[in-house]
Length: 365
Ligand SMILES: *Cc1c(COP(=O)(O)O)cnc(C)c1O
Image 1: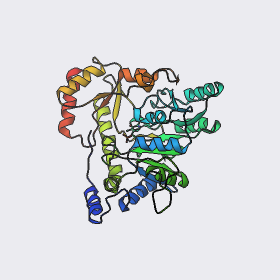
Image 2: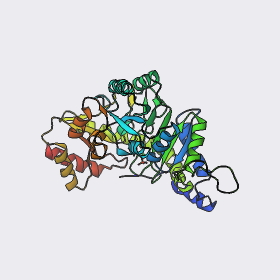
Image 3: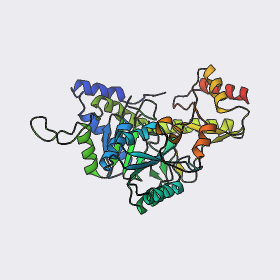
Image 4: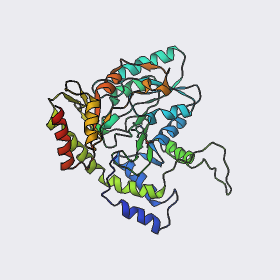
């Protein structure tokens, strides 16, 4: 966890107090949403929400996901991607990773769709994830999705500012989800967003996120609603953070280059951008295939120095809570989980910390 504040967050938060806009409406909220939309190009609309998980939940509701439906999603991800599928009584169908990006394998995706349709299942949505800031192979994924006319929700919670052939992640699918949780590349201390070119869907998500209150002088409800709106205070932090996003990406990428300069060729196989890909390198990740130590030995050794490293995400198809869910692929993600490590990657990683990390790894080598 390493949120770093450096812009005008404090100023925007103070403004919210001074102007009495501390409820979940107000100028910071609008400005934050506008900054997310315009960062992605023209014609986007954004709803700022209480979390990325809430954004995925609402996206699934907007796409009409109901009890008994199926939703296809990446297996190699954080549980926040697929928990909302369960909230709706639907079934997650897990797709394994491709080796190039570690994200959803388009071939396994097509195999899954064919098989689910042959079994008479209703696949309502596909959720590819851009893990650790690396874009998924969206051109191929969208080709398959369009062929079978299944809408796509991009989970860009970890990939704000990443792009593929110059096109930003979050602009390939029908709906995009971002997270501003404390551990993400920028943060509102806790928050998320749903973005789309479909203005009506985004308006509807704001309606659902504020308890689905009908237009009436009293409180009138004809739909089930949620309390998922971001507050104007948090949006003030987000507004300031958006102004430093590109700077944070530069810092994360510099950390990534530092690791590669130091340890490439020492048995570290770093996740690296294929041609045309631009990762925000939210976290620097590597497979330890030819090192004299495994990922757990490295983690424990860094822990002694009070430096936190972690295994990669444990695939969802291996999680006890999703036991029995359909799964397609060749177990690439199981290998990634076994061999992979997230190295300390804060934007604020300083020279002293780098030196300690360097010393520790050199000692192990
Ligand atoms: C963080 C994250 C989420 C959930 O976002 P929250 O804001 O923590 O609810 C979803 N998917 C991925 C891949 C994430 O990393």
